[in-house]
Length: 193
Image (cartoon, rainbow, N blue to C red; front, side, top):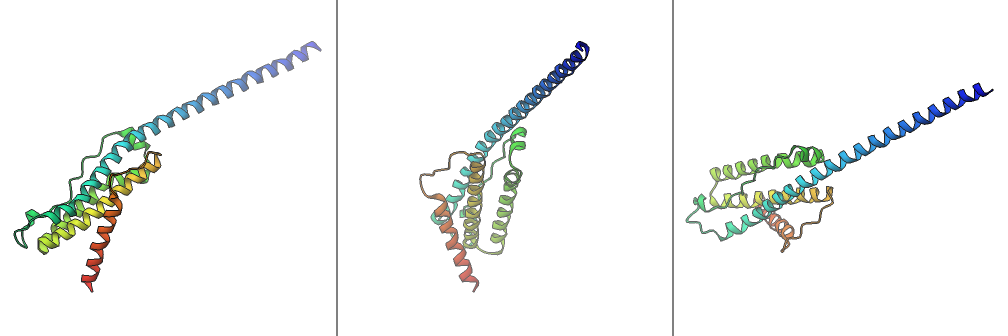
């Protein structure tokens, strides 16, 4: 009898050892996955902080374009040098691990933003070629406000995704930009009638 009992104990002990090994392996694997996710999230937050600053600064610069154009002194209808244009969009930071950690929609929108600014600049230039400086200034104002609002929206989405504190400008920038843009679009619609 003792031989059969010893065989059962051997199988029981072997099963316990195997179960402990599987559990330990699962815990080590889970900890590795958790650490990797944390590291990716940290890299994503670091890149998002840089991008948020970049997009909010760009939005602030865009909000200033209509004020610059309103204050400019044109020496005639073809004084294109007096027209404030869309601000330059800075280079995006190089951070491969941060870019991998971003949501794919945020990643795509951030990477293609510079292209939309380039297209807006081309539209302003085309307006100057086909019209006068006043037309160019109106188009620059409209496109600067649109790009500025898009930059603010992207910064908001980045903040929301990474649960970062909301942007609190000293003046109601977004509301002012929307109001100015609505006035420009209403004038354009009225002129088209």
